[in-house]
Image 1 (tube, rainbow, N blue to C red):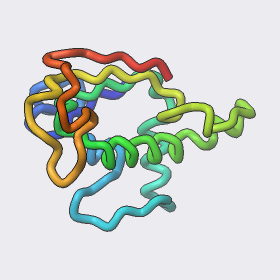
Image 2: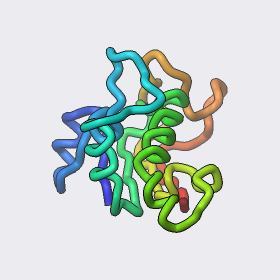
Image 3: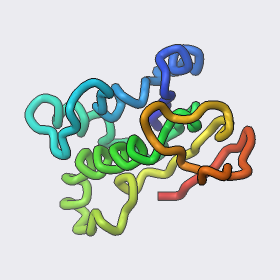
Image 4: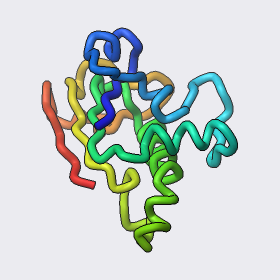
Length: 134
């Protein structure tokens, strides 16, 4: 299981080794986006996600569509060897086949420099927990 939150304060408050989304997925806001990472960064990514079957993301309102998409790409890349070993098509498994629990108030704050996961008219969720089965 991997516990993440958008901010370091929230990750610290969760405890249990929770990490920020940026560090867990190696997506850094001020760095240019690389579709593929390699070398030591790739090994670290693979080690982080190798045995993860459940991802819990807190402060979901801070996560926008572009960041969510980048998180998907990183988990797909991290799980490539798993897909190869099992003979699975990675395109049939969103987020590397990892189940997710999204926690928070979708109406709390909009993502910075990104589009909300909800419509511009609002999604109607307040203080909800959404479970996605990978």
